[in-house]
Image (cartoon, rainbow, N blue to C red; front, side, top):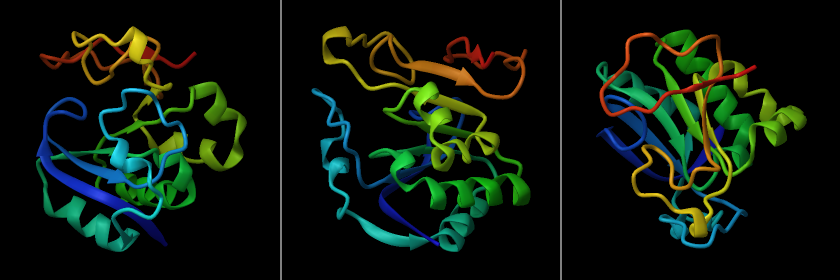
Amino acid sequence: MRIRVLDIAYQTMADGPGLRTSIYCAGCKHACKGCHNPQSWDFNAGKWMEVDELLDIIKADSMSNVSFSGGDPMYQAPAFTELARRIKEETGKTIWCWTGFTLEEVQADPVMAAMLPYLDVLVDGPFILEQRDTDLLFRGSPNQRIIYLHGDPPSDDIPGTVPLEPLR
């Protein structure tokens, strides 16, 4: 299985708490006005990478957890679901995923919803330029939610993170 990858950021601290390997995928139809990464909208940008190849990169960094961003990973949901499943089964690393879809839209689509059991955190919703808030961490506008998908948020707060919304 392959994923169209625009870029990979190694040991970044911009895409979730702590060090992370961030997979930036190509392709997004949301076209949010003021998007910080409009080059990621092109579904033909970047290059194809095999899930196995991405998993090897993720495994090679024992210190970093994982983030999926883009573009929008939900447009490549089957391949990202496979990658997320393997990350969980083979490494136990945490996974954050950004999408312009709301959680409710993801849950209503069986193909996208299949990824949810393997994600720890979903940052959902489109960026709204008119609501831009540079004081927010890990999101650009307050309509975007940081949703902890499994049980209660962790009790060990990491400096620089925001409170997580448990899924109800």
